[in-house]
Length: 223
Ligand SMILES: *Cc1c(COP(=O)(O)O)cnc(C)c1O
Image (tube, rainbow, N blue to C red):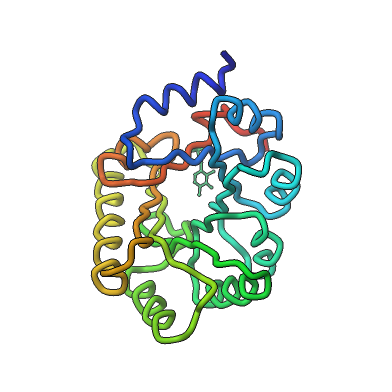
């Protein structure tokens, strides 16, 4: 068995039924994606439009591509035909563009709202208040081509497990707050995307439904 296959097996053993694995294949070649595909992995994450589009065109059509990185509005139209979930929606401007492009391409685009949970200044994302006002705007306007399916966050890159646990707890709290306010009767508002190679066990403990693991499957990335 290849290392990639072994890593996927190892992760699968730890995943409760309600948690899905997004194999983050960014900076890894199509052959590596195929190694994971051959052991049944179907959900892959990419963070750059110019990398996702050629991979999606080349690789099997039953792959579910997730866009996990920061998305620029001018890239939206290129990825819409290929992605099934956009993880990191962090502004109303981006929501408007996704809705506009999805309408034109006759798609309904599933998205998650990125919430800033880390201490680090550099991480993208909205506050709970900002995301609530965005969701209010979405609910009173007619955004028919976009569907908000949950929240996503990146914890601080630290050895301090308590801090990371608190940040994941906060994201779960945000999920429930937004659900109670805007999506009480919605079945599709159900995802909490949190946890990467170094912190996915804590994320699962705190209620993650989607973990995004890259180097833990494909090895350290060579940029
Ligand atoms: C690259 C990336 C990951 C995967 O990171 P690893 O530490 O390699 O598991 C997860 N989420 C996002 C948003 C990323 O950009």
